[in-house]
Length: 283
Image (spheres, helix red, strand yellow):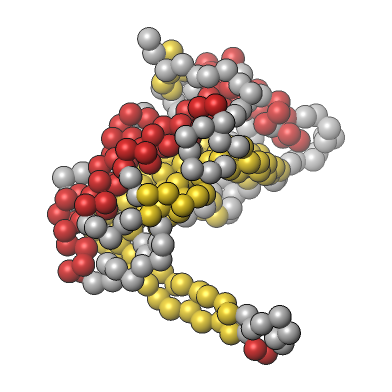
């Protein structure tokens, strides 16, 4: 997919990763709206995610009339739905919603194998409930932030390839001009060939990178607001196609998506960036 070298095994002593997420989506269901409905799932996840909290999400739907319907014939309806957040004393969380399940980790990320094992365990618990038969989308997202303290200039733009620094890495602006925001969005689709030949549909990628100002609300799980300037590298890849809710296949697709994101991130670092983040090759 990405025309970059496949990354070998490595680790970072000072990783810029703020959150890694894997998500599955499935047909909308009214299940798990009561505490009793989710008791079995809570019991099976308690050894890795001992705490559970309940909250509400708002589901909004719009119905439009036939071909010659007027705007007045449109209707908008909304309903609240219960969601469940499972968490631990570290930075792991699992959120179960009527049509979405998301596993996320922050600073306690220990690598792809650990992430894949936990994802497999969560999927197995859902599959064993008997209510999950079809997956409509699987996505993997890695969000990296590099905080830029006030007065810091220059060095951070040398940590990433020039293709990913944009205006932020140029000297085009004159003295006295401060760049406060510069975000680029790239989106593409990849056919299921080569290593992705067995996937059920096209692979999609959405990448955001650039400079964010203080006060920006970053779309994480849960969302957070930046307190200072930060460089963002946010890589989101997903497969949107109906397939059986089969744990082995979904975990295999997670690994394929992760491999692409990992190789892209490794490519993104310059030699100075690899040194700054403390990159160590693992044999």
